[in-house]
Length: 132
Image (cartoon, rainbow, N blue to C red; front, side, top):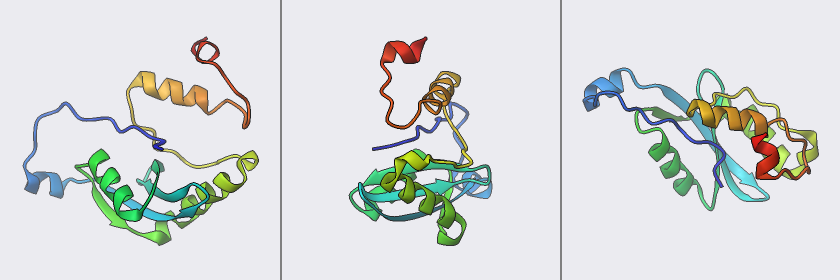
């Protein structure tokens, strides 16, 4: 289950050397939760990816594919609080999830995500209700 969609660049192609010189740094860490492994990645602005899967290597490959221009740094110290919050949320969703987010996507995707964030825990919403 993926909880983010990265925006792909339609700009000019860069050389590998140029991309590494200006690469964004994303810190990430993974841990176990009731749903399996969870990986949380963050930029300086906030959490930009929460990925759930079977194992760490699969999740890291997924993160690499979503952020091919970024420099990925395994750093549990930087991501520790965010990862703990996500794991706690999986176990106790009624507590809510309060993270600083770095939402990436089209304006439409971002507006949908903002609307989804207003739905209370355990409430079911139809697509029609969401679209209104």
